[in-house]
Amino acid sequence: MSESQKQENRQENKTVLSAYIGVAGPETPKYLLANHFLTDFFQTLSEKKMPQISCDSFQKAGILNCEEDEEHKKQLEESFDRFFQRFSGVDAIKTNFKNKKFYFPLHPQMLQSGSFNLRHLLYNMLPNIEQEEKFRQFQTMVLEYLYEETAGVNYLLNEMCKKLFQGEYRKTPPLKDPEFVRLFEERQYRRLCKTFEEDLHCLLTHPFFRKLDFYKKYDYLATLLDSYVIQFIIKRNAVSRGTVQDYVLCQGSATSHLLSGGAFHRACVQNYAELREVFPREMKQYYLLQMEKETDEKGFVYVWEKREKIYVSKNRGAEKEEQGKLFLNFVNRVFHSRYKDAAESSLYQSAKRVFRILNEGEKYCFDKDKFVTFYIEVSRARQGSALTKISSTLPTCGKDIEFIFPNSRSRHKFFALSPTLLEFFVRLYLARKDRTYAYLDNFLADLEERYGICTQKTEKMERILKKMRIKVPFQEFRQNEQALLENLDEINCLVRLSDSGYVITFPEEKGEFRLL
Image (cartoon, rainbow, N blue to C red; front, side, top):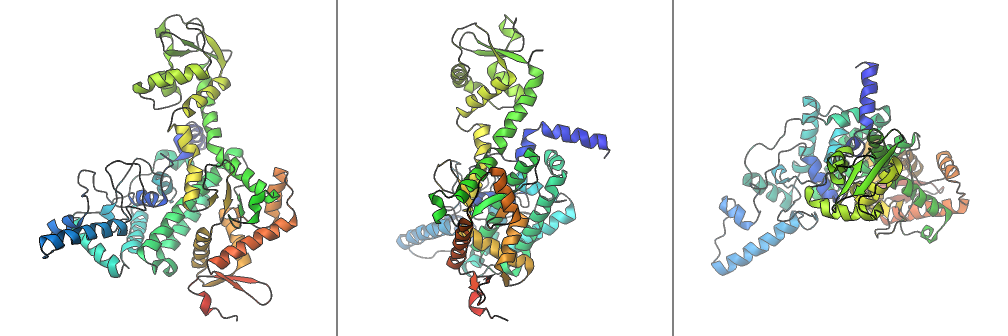
């Protein structure tokens, strides 16, 4: 590809909002996110063909045979249905879809696809995944990771579900979205894609994960996927601001004394707020770019009301309705919004209020910045707007893996390592290093270097705090370190050495530790 073509692609990429974002909706629980990611590797049954799985389904397929009398048979069927519902995770994977149930995929064809998903971002982050050989390699690894080492009840249900579903369940490689191809050609994203591939490969193949039960393995897979949605947002923020500071300030515990308002806590809240604004900021920049060709020579656009409709035009002298543009059609065309005709009435009311239109027929003049600001306010008034969806992606993914606190609707959120997330990172680190023990300092340095998760007082941390103009007393760093140690103690992953050093390990390995 020539340099001019690359330049062209980069320019085109800047005007395609979905390339920045890669999400269709935020309200995706982590298990549903994992299900959607897997649908890029395995076939899904259509909604019409997907059976309402129950005891009756297995009996009709000849897999189960109940010879009890009618009274006992009914009780057994009800018990089986409740057991299967719990075992297959219907209660855990909560959805907003009516008349549709999602399951832990005890067999690949139990996967279902929904409109809210983040899988497109994650699939496109895997380098060369669209190539047949690479795709088959990962497809096989996923299949073996989830289904080949099942035992006990898992094994029985896996065999039953295999017989219930018929037909091919492996997919051929889907093509990558061209928008993502252009985006991930950028140098800043290559390292992110590489680490995602390495971590996913490690999780799917290493005995530290492979020897666990199905549900624990599935939970770890979902945690990894969610964490990389956040990693993408962190990277996007750095690229958007033109810096190399792709980091998060992270508290060692969500329940430490730092919640009382210390300087480090304030820095964590400020750091989160900066990341939270990355997509609204980019959306506004995108809108301004789109508006440049829609204003007159002086950079103005005119808005007016006529017969309970709002019109927009760059021509002040437009007297006829045909010469203007309906507000709904204008924003759909210019901003690639997706308002339907049915939304015109509510949109009219919001636009009239926000743009402060008082007199019918009078033309109100706005520069592009003011028009965009007002339009964002109008779109916020509509539940489920693109801006709301994009903005809520970060807290949703972070909350699901217990990385962002508090869980309430408080605006003052911050990053913190919960015991469950910390145990996941410990396991992943030890698996990557292929050892059962490691020094705590090395682990924390890896968290900072690989994922931008900063918990200790380091040169990088000091640069971050200096930029924020926040001075953190040394004592607060010590307290944050103590909170982290208490977290590790809680999950039984910490070994204290005689010389005040610390070693991390798995909970199941701690009793076997011997100081060499």
